[in-house]
Length: 160
Image (cartoon, rainbow, N blue to C red):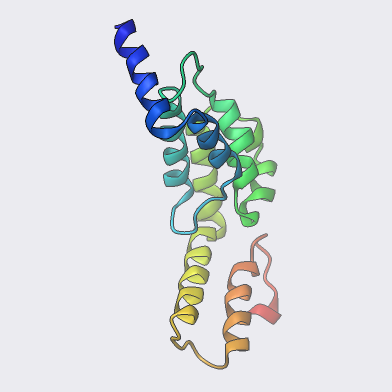
């Protein structure tokens, strides 16, 4: 089995370069949550990548859930989530399952995922040259209001 592992790491280094492990970690530490993924899908993806990075370099330890939570999830969450995540002590949680549950609850309670998807769709339509209802300035203003309104559960008549 050791011969296989040695050969595996040799092939990985030869085909992908000797810095592939560090490159993957850098990607995970620096990449914001993609708009098209829910927080659960995003965290699941990071968890899989972290598990697989151990097979990219010899004598590497797997990445702990605490590291994933503090250096990847907390750092790369959309701004709409950060305040609620910290208030719910998500950054102090020990398991990714708890973090996913907390983020899901936050998203449902504040409608964040739907607002972000709506904003993403509106921006996509604008890029495609599609029309919403009005001028380009009104379209951008509508998209930004959709996300910013009611994030803390308060109603602001100016945005209704």
